[in-house]
Amino acid sequence: MGGEIISESGGGLPRNLQPAFPEVTTFGDTQPEAALEGLKAIEEAMAARISDGEDIPLPLDETSGVGRYVEVSALTFLKCGLYMICKSTDVSRAELTRRLGWHREQVDRLFRIDHKSQLDQIEQAYKALGVPLDVGFQLPAAA
Image (cartoon, rainbow, N blue to C red):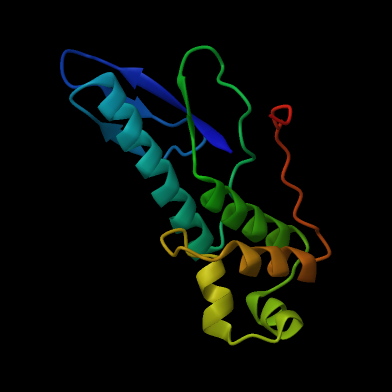
């Protein structure tokens, strides 16, 4: 899951705009620093949208050719995916708590971007929603 950062250098520091998150604008002394700040801002915007019950845009696979692609961490991706599935299927946190048999605070942590949830807990939550966690990548040939 990633986002597009469009940088502008209108006579000052590189400024980033995130088309999918119009509420976010960031700056940096250099393009790499501006991209890092943009990524942090995208993650903060995702956290705010989860907290406010707002939609999160679908992830980009690539940019429009104008911007720079930045990728959120796998944990952030999984947490946003969990939120998006719950929202689209009208499963409340209370219902997810019931399905998992956990305390409410344990479930709430699954939706906090800044909390380092355990992968097995996230996997259990996906299963409770009827969505098995499927991670795909290419493995090298055995050595």
